[in-house]
Length: 245
Image (cartoon, rainbow, N blue to C red; front, side, top):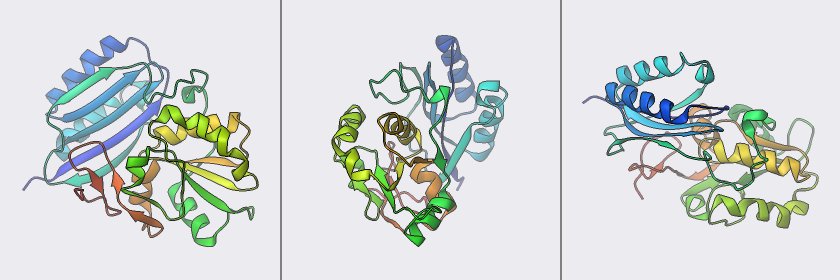
């Protein structure tokens, strides 16, 4: 049986000619026999695709020929079947809607922490400066219910546009702590970390690559449950294997 490669990738980068890019990208993805979804926005790109190794490699090699995407980081997982029914490329205003146009990751990221460093901080109970570390889940509550980091903060938001209000309501609880914002693949926590820094939260980091990269690079022993994903696999366990709800 041919194994299916699933990729998730995003990059905040200023993009123009979105309709033209959409047509070209859809044609290339279909030529590579891929299925999934690509979102193109003025602030960047978000990719969820599945196909054979040869087809995925061909698409990524083509994509990285564009200077805007040369350094795009990709997260990989495997499945027996393609978890998408068709191939879509959509143009939207934002990769993930926050309703805060001044939050522009493409203009500069908030500080990030890589998966292995974060795992070490959690194991030792503090960061390298001796501050206690707390994990902040920036996802919607129904996603959190599938699984999250042990003792992670969950503000029970129902949509990402609720996140800024939750920050203002709870930011005093974060004083004196190192806060690591996280999400599925890195997009929401990247915007979240920028907003929190601008709101006056000190010592805020984003988890680079989100939960999926954490699963790739660590044993994820501090994660309880599975990671919700927005395709037919439903959730992935820490070994990145599908676990239907």
